[in-house]
Length: 364
Image (tube, rainbow, N blue to C red; front, side, top):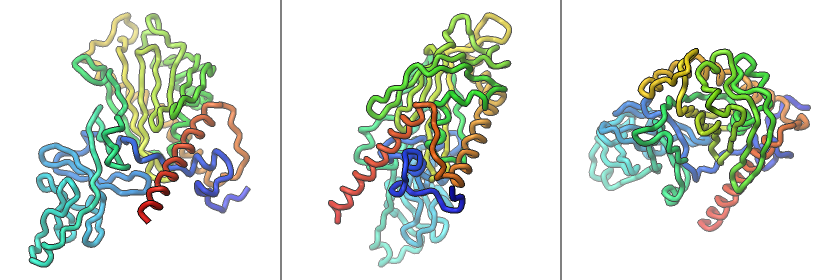
């Protein structure tokens, strides 16, 4: 093994694992890029989708917009600038851009300069489930794609949910492998989110990988106090890698979605939505009132879920470091779900590259 050579790129990869670790994600999907409450009206932040920098800003009226993160003048990042009304203003010369990416105004105001009306790319943006979603691909098909439907999080009787987001120093495929591969129960032996998992289904249907485990869910020292094991079937869990998203379901009462934002080959932003139909009051046979569920979830996130996910973060970041040093080690994988995920991820990336090549040849 050679620890001094960088891992191969997608075209040079010699096996499935190497290919999977070099892929991006197809941009022709909606991607969660930030929690709404983290972007106050009149502010701008930088988000990155697979090495492409995007300026996401919130107008004074609260609406969200996204522009290519560069001023057409000197290519300075617009995320360094400021928001005025519904416009994004470059910090360097004060060039202003409207929500479509068209240069709307400039302080110099010279006649010859006013004749030049450069524009930069804009991106479709939506807000849903407390997250800001961006469509980094072909804007002409944005409305043909749908943000995942989560009916439990909408309407007057919606379930409580407090989103969590992190930045992990690992490739997005490692994150997907981690959250659906229940052979790593040893890592979580302190919290025991699942135990004694036996894979009962692994089936790829189109772009989705469906799997099921017979497993004991929520049996940890503290988590078991909040789960109504008497009235719920917590001995089985369904999961799905619904490219490029991932979800799980326990007896239609305990659910989660994971949305990944690929930054580059070794960095991924992750957005977790854990939501529960109900939780019980510890040591009592009564449910936590619906109006108190959000407060209960905030406590649960802090005391149980964040520490649990921190273990996953440490593991996948260590895996990333190990892969970079030993990428040419023979791949050893016992859980078939991991290979199934990787096959879909590689196929989708190859389809995207082929599609882009055809567009480039047509425009040449």
